Structures are given as structure tokens and as C-alpha cells.
Amino acid sequence: MNMDKVWVGTRKGLFVVKKDGSGWSLGQPTFPGEPVTQVLVNPHDGAWYVALRLGHFGIKMHKSTDQGANWKEIAAPAFPPKPEAGPMKDDPTPWTVDLIWALAAGPGELWAGCLPAGLFRSRDGGASWQLVESLWNRPERQQWFGGGYDHAGIHSILVDPRDAKHVTVAVSCGGVWQTHDGGETWEVTSKGMVADYMPPERKEDPIIQDPHSMTMCAAHPDVLWVQHHAGMYRSANGGLQWDRIDAPSPSAFGFAVAAHPTDPMRAWFAPAKADANRVAVDGKLVVNETRDGGKSYIAHGKGLPERDAYHLIYRHALDVSRDGKGLAMASTTGGLWVSEDEGVSWTCVSRDLPPVAAVRCG
Image (cartoon, rainbow, N blue to C red; front, side, top):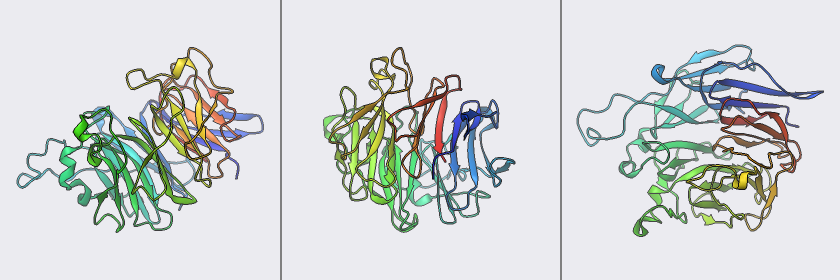
């Protein structure tokens, strides 16, 4: 199935970009003027979900069951009251959801990852949400810390297509965690990652790693990819062991990675110059593709800005279609591009969008 639709969550609304006979068209925004932080198109029932971050008015969630023709506000994840006694009484983390940073779906379930790093689950299509206390109450959480934010957050959630009770989440900065029993118990699985930004004695500590984004090869779910703050990683055994892969010159830094849905050796990365210089390398925007598991890369730039490009691609702003042929990418500077030849060449859909937080291919 060819990619014919792209959902774009921006600081000023949700745009649904559609392909017709004349190319790609950018429609009017839904939720105009409101910051959209995450978008989910549920593969199990087709429902659309958006998460909003409205500042003083808090976070909101909306759902559409008729492909965006109508929207209904639904419940949003919320922490229970902070305990007044016990080990959590002095927890320095605020028990208020500031941002819905990840949305994922399993059969009959929705998952939401938030800032601060609470994981929530809904079993009624978003009508209600429950905090996954087994992860929130882990004593290791007290050592998690924020990367770009003041507190740690959960930004990536992967549901194993073979077993919906197997869920993997990535925390910035808290490493990779997995459950095999539907959230009853958790284990940290960040072995092999190295945090170059930490003191030597803590560089390999699994519970303070900073994965920027994590994705899975849908047809080979044991193959996972991570763009880490300090490099790029691949796992061939479901995240139990992470192998640092070669990085394309001159940068291993970035936020976004997209895995090919059927080929476990292929993935695309959107590089930035460096942690302290978050723009395209040498002012030229490219997408780096590996076809051999990270041993080598091809830099794709045809159709992308070749000079004076000060774009940054956020962790959710690069996505690949279910057949692996189409990709979409958008930037904090309001550029939106689509590729229909597996990332080799790109078409600019808009240069004038608000800053983009999330892109989803359909």
C-alpha cells in the first residue's frame, strides 16, 4: 500500500497532508493554534488520537473515529495524588503530567508515555487512564534525570506484535525498560550503551542512559534501533544487548531514527551537528540510511536544502510507511518533506509550517 497520507503535529495544530493526482496537498489545521505533541493512528481499530499541551490549561487528548471529520475530547493521563507518607512522600518529581510524549497501541490497549516519566495505560479507548505504578514505583526512578527537560520523560513505547504483554519503553534519561507480563514487572535493558556525558564510573550505568528515540523493525521485532545522546545503537536480541554502530561522518548526534518495517538491516537517521550545535551539519540537510546494520551509510539529500539550513528534526518527526517505500520528515523550522523512493529523493510539501513535534505516515 502506497503512502497517501501524513499526519503532522505542530506547535499550532494538526495538519493532515494528502496525496492526490497533482501531488501532496496541505489542508487546513485541526486544533488551530494549539500545540500538538503526539499523534497516533491506531492500527488495530483505525481511530486517530492527538495529544495537546496547552500550558496553563494543562494537557488534553482528543479522538476521532471517522478519519478526522469529528473529534471528541477524551480523558488525559493524570497522576494520582502524591502520597503524604511512605517512600514517595519526598519524591522531588512533580506528580503532574506536563507533556504526553509517546502514544502506542496494542490489541485493546493504549499506552502513553509522559513527562515526567510516567507510563499510563488505557483499556477503554482513552476513556480512562491508569498509571503503571510498577514502573513509577521502581526505586531506580529516583536516579533518572532530565535531558533537555528538568525531569526524565518516556518518549518511546514499543509493543511487541507477537506478544502484547511485551512492552519496551525508552526514558530520557533513564535507559531502556521492558516488561514481559503486561506491566506487572520491569527490568532495565540498557546493557552496552555508554553515556559519554557522565563521569567515568557511571558511563555504562544502565539506569541513566539517554536514548533520544527507539524504534523496531516490525517484521523482525527483536531488532531495535536507538539514536542515543552519545551515539547510535542497534540490538538484535530484543534490547537485551545494545551494540554501538558506526556513525556516518561527521556526526553521530541526532534525535530521530526510523526502522525499515521488513528489512532488519535498514534504518534512517536524521543527523544534527552536535549537542551544543543543533542544526544540520554544514548547513546541509540530509537523511543517513544504513542498509547493512550500521556498517556503512548513504547520505540522501536530493530535494532537501543544500545550504543555510538551520533545521533540527525532533525525535518523532521522521517516520516510514508500513511498506517501507515512503518516508516523511519535518523540522523545528517548519519544513516538511516526503519521499516516495525509500528516502533517496525528497519533495518539499511546505517550508512555512509551525515547528513540528510529530510526523506519522499512512
